[in-house]
Image (cartoon, rainbow, N blue to C red; front, top):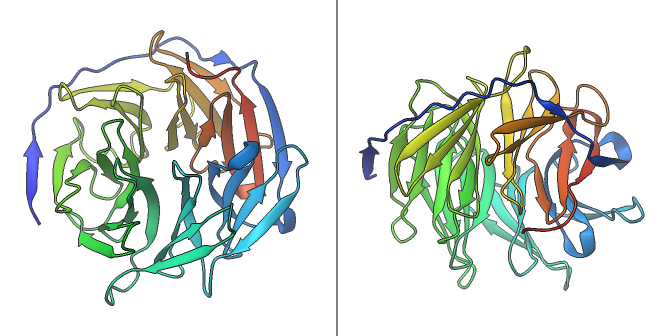
Length: 325
């Protein structure tokens, strides 16, 4: 595996003001059977795809009626991450099947793409769609891979430094990046070879959990161990880091950038969701629908942010008003 270490200049940003309390309109959708929800993604007609990890199914929540339908993904399924491709197909990282699974809401077809060889428990985590329409994914045991959507071929590579490959995203130029939770680095994937350029964090043992690109190609990262929101700019190699304005412990799990380039994070330390406006560098806090929410990967569509509250099986939506400017 080819590994290149990049040096990067660092700037530290400090947000010292108390967070604004949100006046957003929220709505909670309790899910059936108290099933364990992990991640969410926008589905057609304002619905929400969600992974029912313990039930081995993909859930589809109709936010107009509150009703759910379920799609069986296969034997021993345990879905983790889910995204929606540009063509509307849902792609799921299914750790139970050791496979990437697709679901087409138009045809109702489910396709299972098994990982090649016998690699043990890859611990599949997060998918993303690259600029060619292919699906990349991470495995927390220290793997990353790709599904060629044209041929169905699945490639799998060992990630640098061993275990930890976790959150994954695609920048507007179509390139793929991921973070390693256990090994604390940011990686840029070569889409042709699968090789990874390793970019070290400005602090040791940051514990980057999730990563999301904004419209300019800057990467926003949730630091689980240090509790800070980080930004890396590939164009300049510069870092910025923003501590949450809270007296409680910060443990940032999810990060999501909406259509207006507002950044959203979930903090398990104080059981809140925060939005961060990069223009004003101000945080706004939002409470979950009920305490002890355990918010996993946030996602959304223009005008709405989707919150998966895993600890009490609820999807909460936040109406942010309007679309991208």
